[in-house]
Image (cartoon, rainbow, N blue to C red; front, side):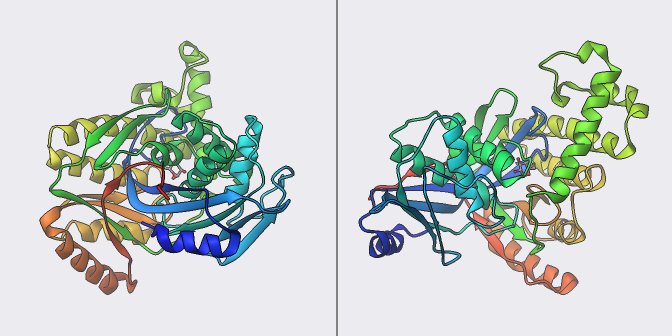
Length: 389
Ligand code: GLA
């Protein structure tokens, strides 16, 4: 977690006394990948890595956002925002202000100091944590109180319409609504969620493959297009599903099989991953709630195999981490988490073995891949909040 005191000091040295400070967490997804733009189910937890935004009204006529992490400043006129992304860190705050403005929220000119400790490009949603922290700050400056799901939707819109990543709602939702010591089962069709407690004797251990990934363009959007192709073929093959509300979430494996010849092999496999993944999330939520950790671990293994083989979104390093995890002490389950093509694995580990697991997997990965992985022992954290000054 970012320490607030030094950040407040830096803000007041550069901009004068802070008026508000907000924090928003990163996340790890336990199960349910690429289902969140098809009305499906996901089960993430917010983690104890976050972004903090300290704000105060501007002294002059310009707004300034200072990133402590990048040691850079972004100066702009809050009433005339850039309409195009610059493809750097400023896209996230600018995108949020752009998105909020479309729903009629205009923040007065302001100064902001931003700092985060969510590892960048690691699949732990550093971008959503920045977006949500900035959105909370901008809404406070504009004097608006907004339901959390609307904040999440506004941040998703920033990601889709400004940054250019066609991502779903999971990351922004969990950054807004995370519950301490719980995972959330989120129904991305109606945006309802329920919290599932994580057993006290289980730790979330996140292993960074150190393979960087980026969502803006590239493979993520390509997978999404393949899923779209499959969904369209399913719709066309079955007139009964040609309703407004039909989404891939509603399809069964039998529906998919019937439509198989009207879509590419890739589209078929991507859709098969999503249909089976939704079923796995339901079962995982039940397994976790009833303390059936053995089943939870099996489901994580099945989810990883489906993500690797049907969705083709893994990478050799993540596969190796999952394989090596199985031989470590205290492991309940392991899989690649997040958007894919690199990033981190999530591991459920018996708490008493968490340190031994960390050491064991670090040494094994170094030995097999010659990569010095960052490994994080995490707690499931609460969602975004205002910090007391
Ligand atoms: C990224 C996106 C999410 C989700 C995951 C994959 O994190 O931002 O919306 O699609 O990938 O589950």
